[in-house]
Structures are given as structure tokens and as C-alpha cells.
Length: 179
Image (cartoon, rainbow, N blue to C red; front, side, top):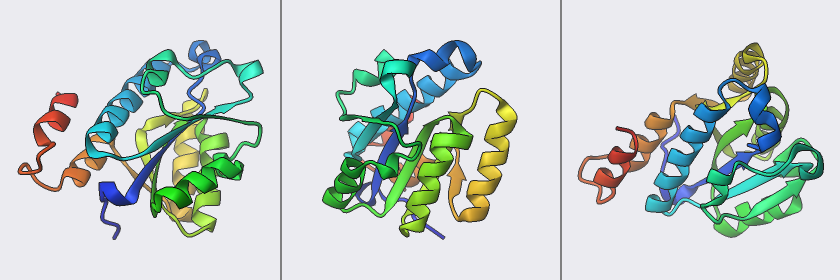
């Protein structure tokens, strides 16, 4: 069983780009969940990176997520972990647990998760923070990623596992995010 600890966690935000918005019914919901995750991460000092798949063709990250002023890394490989600056950042932060959100579940998210698992990271997928154009693809990707060794949890589960207790000094701030 993996224990989630903020000081051992890092977030990868994968390809939440504007060109997907009209094609993914739950895009706004995902954007909201990721916003909440990033707000919590700021309170708990959990670093995060944002990735964009071929922005010339797919546009840029949703503006609400860019407001966090996180590093934005362009990629053409489907796996974010194929990007050298991703590997470097994870090594610099010395994090063993990678929390993954984004789209599309069955392509870029799944390939990133596979590569992280192959490199022996603990991978946690925010189950309500990923999606695909076809919802069935998300279901199938989650099943496969879990079978491969990733965990998937609800956003609130992750946040409260990070807190551990209502006595945590960030409890009020984090609990206010999910009310």
C-alpha cells in the first residue's frame, strides 16, 4: 500500500488543451478538478508540470490552468516522460510518487503512466481528473493502468491523504477547495 505524502509527490498535467474542449463533453469538469488539485498543490508545496501535445495543431493549455504560472513543456511524443525536461524535473525534485491528470486517457495519459511505471515510480491517477473523447476509452485505460500497477483515486481522496489529519495546518484551506 502506498502512502501519499506531499513532500514525495509531484503532479503531471497532460495535454488539457483548448482544441479538445468542443470534443470532450466533460472538459470543463476536468479543468475544474485540475484547478482544485493545483490550488491544493500550491498550499502543500507539491510541484507540478504542464505538458502540451503539439500546440501548433492542438492549441495551448486551458487559460485557467496557465494562471498557476507552472512550467509548460511542449511535446510531440505521446508520453510526457519521453521529454527529457520531465525526467530532469522529477530527478531534481526527488519525488517518487507521480500524480497524473489530463487527456486523453487512452493515449498520452496511459503512455506516460506506462513509462513512469517502467521506471519504478509510484503512479497515482486522479480518476476524476482524466478523460478521453470517448468515455469508454477512459474506462478501458483505467482498467489497464491499474492492471499495470498504477493506483487511481478520486481527487478528494488524494487531497485528504496528503493532509492525513484535520490538525494539518492546511486543512481549512484544502477542505474549502472541495466544498
